[in-house]
Image (cartoon, rainbow, N blue to C red; front, side, top):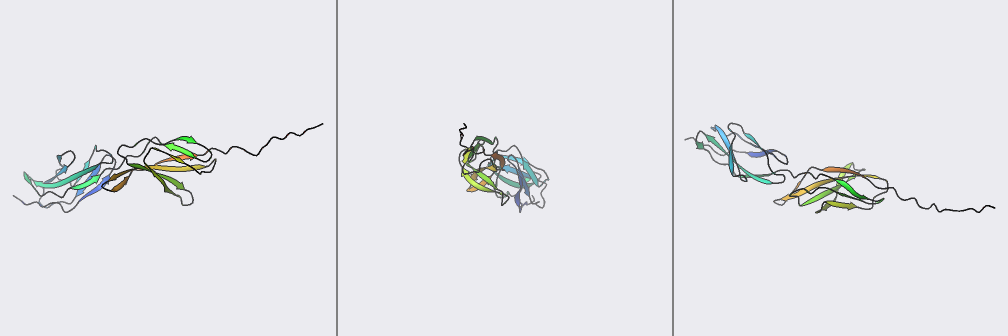
Length: 193
C-alpha cells in the first residue's frame, strides 16, 4: 500500500463566532482527506478539497482538529492536533441607564463565556478609541464628563483561552450628558414708589 505522509502545513484561514475555516497542504498520492474534530470526536471526509469550513460552533470556544490523507481504504499519517478558537460574541443591548450633567451609566447584555469587558472611550484629538476600563460586570459609570456634551464609547467582550485574551468585535454607543442647571440668576425686586 502507498505511504502517505502527514500534510506539511495545517492552518486557520478564517474565523467567525460560529465557523472555523481550515486549510492544509496537498499530500502527494492522496485521493482525499479526513478531518477529526476533538470536541465532537467525529471524522469528516472532505474528498479532494484541501479546505474545510466547520460550522455550527459555539462562540469563544476552543476546538482541536487533525487532518489525515487517504487513498482508497489506506489511511495516511495524521497531522499534529491544531487548536483554534471561535470569536467571542459581541455585546448587545448597549443602553444608557442613567445620566447627569457630569456622569453617565450604561449597560449591555451578558456575553456567555466572557470573563470581562473592555470599555473604550473615543479620543477626539487622536481620532481613536482608547481603553477606558476593564470591568467584570455588565455596566459602567463614567464620571468627570462635561455637561451637554456628546461622547462615544465602545464595549468588547473579553474571553481568556490558554492565557490569551480573545476580544469580540466592538459595540459602540453615543452618549450625551445633561446640561448643567442654570445658576446665578438670583431674583431681585426693585421697590418702586
